[in-house]
Structure formats: C-alpha cells, structure tokens
Length: 366
Ligand code: F6R
Ligand code: MG
Ligand code: MG
Image 1 (cartoon, rainbow, N blue to C red):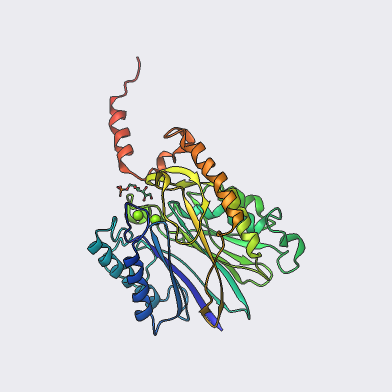
Image 2 (cartoon, protein in one colour):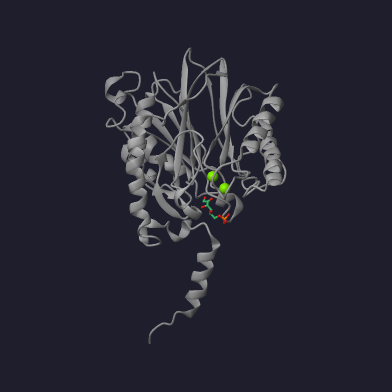
C-alpha cells in the first residue's frame, strides 16, 4: 500500500513566554484533527516540542495534498483562537498569511512529507527540534547516513553499502527551490563542503542508492525568508525511515550524542548545543537550549503504533548532563564572537539598526 507520512508543525502560542503550549491548546488541535480528519487521514499523532505543536499524520493524498494541508492550517487557526482566549504568549505566531492558498508550505508552519510503498514492516522516527533552524540536522544526518564511524551498516550490510544520495537545498535562495543531488561515498567531500554552512545549505531529503527509496525528509522553511523579519526560529521537523535498506534506528540516534552547536537559542540569535530531550519537553535555560525530541513508530496500512520515546533512556540522562555543561561553557562568553550568530543571521532588527546609527558616528582619521 502506498501511503504518505506528513508532519506539519507550528508555534501558535505558549505558556510563560516561548516555553510550552497549554493543555487546552493541544487538546483543541487534537480534537480538530480527530473530527475534521475523519475522511482525510488514516491516522494522526499530535505532540509538542518546546513551544511547538506537531501534527504527524498518515494518508493517501500524496505530498502537498491540499486537503491535508488545509486541515492542518484550520487546526492551527482554531488552536490560535484557544491560545488567544487563554492569553497565551505569541498566539498565532507562525501563521504568517491571512488565508490558505492550497499548500501550507511558505505560510509559516514547517512541513516534512514522504510518500512511499509501505514495507511489510515499516519503522520510522519523527524528530522535532525547537529554538533552532533546519541546518541543525545537517551534521547528525550526514554522520548517520554517510559515516561508517556512526553507521556500521555501511561496512556490514550489503543492503546499504552502496550509500545514500543527499538532496541539499540552498535556503538562502528564495525565488524558487535551488537544489543539488550528491551521492555518498563518491561525493562525500562535496557534501561536507556544503553542509558545513548550516544557515545556507540544508539537507532536504535522503534516498537509498540500492532501492531508490526515500529515507528522510526535513522541513526547510526559513521563517525570516517568508516574513522578511524575525518571527521566531524555524524549529524544524524531520522524518526518517529506518532498518533494512535504511540505517538502523540506533545509527540515526548515535550522532545526536555529539550535541552539535547549532544556531538559535535566545532570540534566535545565539549558538548552543542541540540537546536530545524527552517527548513533550518544555524550554528553559536562556530560552533553550536548542532541543530535539524523537518518536519512533511502526506503521501498517497507515495505522500508527504508539510511539517509543527514543531519548527517554538512562544513556541520554548522562549525555544531557554533559550537554548542559557544553551549554554553560558557550553561554559564559555572552555576546562575544562565536557565542552569537553572524550579523547576516541576527534575527532581531534592533542590533542592525543600532549598527547603522553607530556607522554614521564613525570618523575617518586624517
Ligand atoms: C527564540 C524565541 C525566544 C524569543 C524571546 C523574546 O526562538 O522564541 O528566545 O525570541 O523570548 O521573545 P519576544 O520578542 O516575543 O518577547
Ligand atoms: Mg514561540
Ligand atoms: Mg518554537
């Protein structure tokens, strides 16, 4: 059976600042999807990561299916009404357009989707990150799909030893989608050359070279490219099919132990380690640190199992302690140098205006 796996995610308001959506808001969106999705979806799972709400769903409407996108848009709108009633902070924050125009992409919410022929057993992991941008997946997915130091299957399994093809998008180019396909291992250095720049080149999807099957999909929206100004960090979601012709679940999880320094954190303008957290975690220290959650599922004829929380394990407790120290280490240097994002990425207009004013006061020494 051919199914589509879609995840549509937005921040439409949260409690106590940009920390976590309210129970009433999640309840509203869950109910909206349950009743409105009866004839559209096969199954759905609604969850939160930091201040974001994600609708993971299965259906047969294909990628960019208009009815699915409209349902999610309407659910976020109706959630926004609850958020307004409760006085939640940032109500409707990610809904950047007034009316729905057929596809939720480019309207604020993040989207990752894959259509595929279901395998007899179909495991996958749904990732959601908060307080960061889509480049946060670059290093973990590069390592999980292309580096035998993390992916033992590249050496040990004939099913994946041919490697994977990375589709990389230039998110700085806003007129249209500007993409390149590069295959590992032949073009490993070219892939690394692009992926080192997390704010410009982002993994959009990954494909198996032995079967051609799609392994991964990442939401690549840059909110500031839509709104032209700061409206919140992109907070990307991703879907990864695992096992068999794809990496094992553990091979995909292993690189997250590094907790790479990523862009985001306070006011979307800093650098902090990406901390793997339990499902439905809130935000705290310095509006961060940037977090990622992972829910593993199996799906059969579109019906989802219950999720397994991939970062809820004693192993990750000890990793989180190290990552907290990593966060403190970079925070100690405050605004200086590598602790903040470069000028081109600063999300708040304030510093840009201030620099403009200061520029006028400079004098050229005679
Ligand atoms: C970052 C984020 C927060 C806010 C910060 C200020 O993505 O959401 O760090 O930028 O809390 O928020 P405002 O400007 O809404 O008061
Ligand atoms: Mg927010
Ligand atoms: Mg968020």
